[in-house]
Length: 511
Picture 1: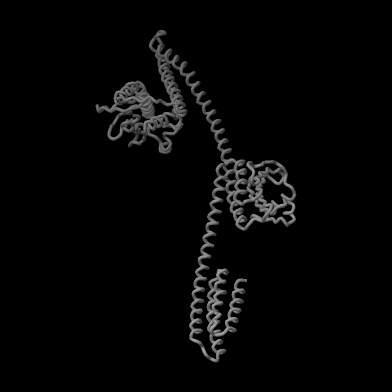
Picture 2 (picture 1 turned 120 degrees about the vertical axis):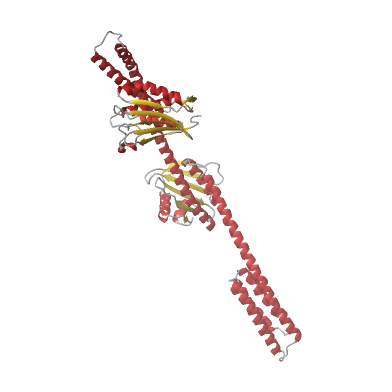
């Protein structure tokens, strides 16, 4: 339109220039169409008009000279040259103006985009400020109204097409979001179905049949998820939403769908965490019951076992008269079996305490050599009964550690008992202690050794040194005691036969 007007004015100015005398240079009027082309924001149009103006100026000057009897006045020629220069100047200024206008327009568009993105980011920050579904939906209708300038923003949520919908409605100017539960009207159901099929934001004009039923211009979007059918409806009573507002709604809907999905995922995870917590509590309760049963059983059995041990020992010492030698051997065997049973009960109690976190917290510095010497002396009777030589390789060096002496004693006793039981008559069990960068307590024997298939799980629960031997908890307790003080327990087979177990601790273990 502007281009046609410019060309028309150019022709008109040229005709006027042709009809005027030579000394009356009307070519200056040709600057008008050139300047007017700035409104078109098309540099190419300005360049073409400038070229045509220059040609029109030359042709008009020539025609004026012919009309004057082939006489071209010097002043008229100078005016023509000045006019030609003015065409170039006006054309250049017009092109510069168009460039500035375009840049200004681009800058304004960028600012509008930035402002829209900032508003969208702010809106989504408010929506994502909580992961509670109720609060997310309330915040969503508020922010949708503020972002798009809609008169009414509504979100409808229902679990299926057969359920009542929860309506969250916010009207511009209100302070609170109105919430109600009601069925969809046929018009609303039809609009939502159209949006669901389109899978994008759709616009409804107030002149459309559905728009007339709504009484407003509207934008509708479906945000359905696997958990519910969710729809957003925005309406304007007095105007049609702009293209920018439509674009903002589409972007808002895409982000809102993600926010709703995150909120639903959080709700689901919270429910799963609650379920896991309940299962954990139930498991802990069962564990506590089992631990209490072990405690009760062990404590109840220790008393009669101790009484029986005292009675049989007194009988063996002659407190009840002289006993036949054969009966004395039976008593010795029974006392040994009774002692094994008591040791197993103590082991079960200790495992129960470790598993429930009730292990000892008593840490004191003590010399390890005297402790090992006492253990070897106390175990000599058991070793002699099995025909095994038990010795302590004492190099006389002072070795101190900080720990609970009773626990270290228990760990070493377990290793010594295992070694004695795994060594045939005539064999040897040795106990030693070494100190270098670490403190190492070594128990070795020349007995049967550990079968290769059992070595991998040697220090796990219920996997003893020998199949069918003991509770399978002794070496597990040794490992737990070593780990408690930052140490380890290691096994090494000896050649041609035998085993070496080594408890290794940091020098300041437990300090």
